[in-house]
Length: 241
Image (cartoon, rainbow, N blue to C red):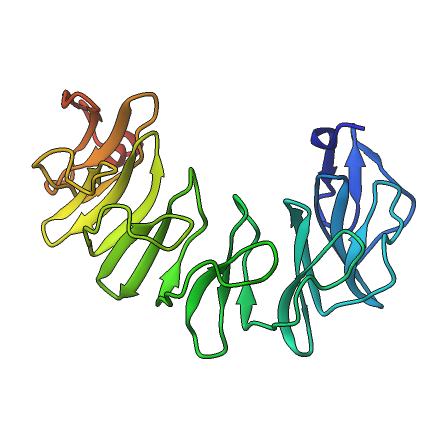
């Protein structure tokens, strides 16, 4: 069965395939199916995972359960948050205040003290550093914050990839990341340097070499990677009047 053909019902109590119930029963809540064909659900017994026939895949029950990513799922019990394998077994003994989902062999966790870092698939810290916040890895790079206005990027071993710091940073997409410095929003390359001198009220990631931006005067423009700027004839607000 192609998991892309399965969707949640409108009330999120069961799953549908081509508009028909995938199985007979209903739950308090269901989430989407993820490879290898398991979905997080909750009923009177607790939170756990089911297969495409609606059957539990293990006997354990949790307070919360989330989808499988890279064969591991985030769950929560009375001791805290952690990850389980496909058989419902914890892959490490540590418990966290919160965990994310595994992406590219790394996962974001938050300690009871409020510190963020990444763990590997064994549950071990991927590097010694601790941050105010970290994001998921994409193309081997993740955003890190050391304070309210200090953001940069690291590799999977915790090394800064460019050593430049901004007030805000986002993930890299097709070689560029959106960022904000004291002058406004912009795009930066993997060297951490601004891709251009202009600053904007906000910018979107490049989409097929063009990015939507709003100038500080409130006008919408599109900007290409080669520096071409096209001013849109009318703003979104004007078009909806």
